Length: 202
Ligand code: MN
Image 1 (cartoon, rainbow, N blue to C red):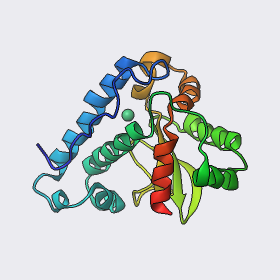
Image 2: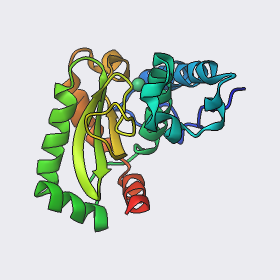
Image 3: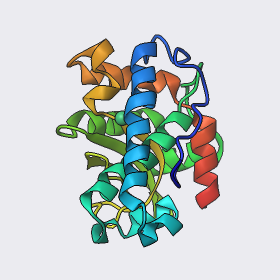
Image 4: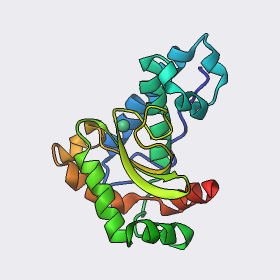
């Protein structure tokens, strides 16, 4: 057992059906996420990074080997991703988060369109993000397993919502139809969790 642990999946593998299928979920969690955690533990073993949090490591990731960047990002990103989805999710956020989205993007549909576009146009493997940057909401995307906590990111901030657009996240069910996966994903978002992450920053 290494320092970093695979968090328990907060629902069953089939909980997000029909939008995210059971087999994709099981492989994504038990093989991909588990692999990032294992490889991160191997990469930090015997180094000073063993005593740091994942956030501390990502903040200065440019100083570390590529294995730390790739697997540290993969560990953090998937841990966030599982929590911001749930069975019977979707809808729109209300309260302070809903207000902040309306203020930053005009209205929810404008926000949804811009976020979906960031996810659809991320070339190759990567993630789309909603981040808090200096108190403001910003949409961005990153390649590979990078994220906005990293010092190498073009747009830095604290992620409160993220969408995995690696082919491993959707190919079994959607094949090359990434836009269809993105559109369906809005039905499983756990807005209570996103709002909780938002209020923890403000
Ligand atoms: Mn993934």
